[in-house]
Image (tube, rainbow, N blue to C red; front, side, top):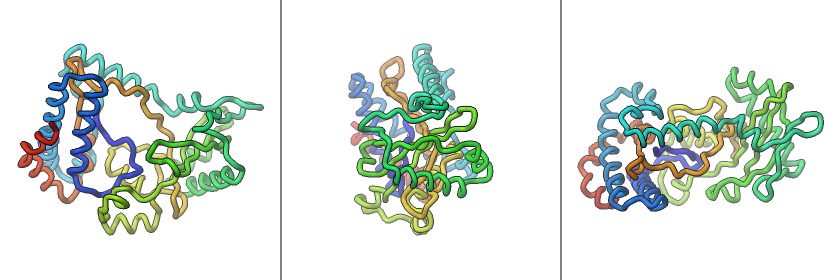
Length: 309
């Protein structure tokens, strides 16, 4: 199943780029899991055909229907063979275990008086200087003030218990990132992340001019506003704690969602990478050029097959 899971670089760009990255991901997944070359090739070709078909079906819907479209992970299980169904059901069970509460238990420990603190793991996670902690406290306060009334009430039930600096992924090397541990009077914990956001590489290095509306949004809310706004466009279900940045600068606060570990379950029982395009299609099908994407997807199918191979 392929779907965006990192929105730091989200921006407007040619739809072909996403399609090429999708096909490359299938090939890499096949190589990484020692799939038969014919199975990987078949999956890549099927993905191109599925892309064209999904786009054609999507543009027939109304804008409202496209907006509310979403992916149900359990859809289609009944059409799978027994072995493939078992693989997907196991993956769904594992995903449901990866909750914010589990992240809090894994990353924290109880200190004096029952106050929770982050467990240091140098050099990837360490407590920072007092000035950094002071600024993070300020960010959280402004975040809560900018949130919707229901989220503001929720955050009001917690107080900041601890702050730690966190080293993020390869794309975030050199950017500032902090984890914020919130705790209520009963010991319940909520882990949030404050992360620096810069301009998307699609604009910086891809040279893609962004729509005026997005530029105005960034001018008003910073690059963090771009990340959150485009996440909401690309994914149907976004955590209600994902917010625009509390400052007209670089940072944004959001609820921490642990990433999956050990992504080796990428194939069905017959060795073919499992693919569902509906989630990834949501962003493409809502653009003004969606008919062009659908038409060219059909017209250029033979050439795209060759490239995929």
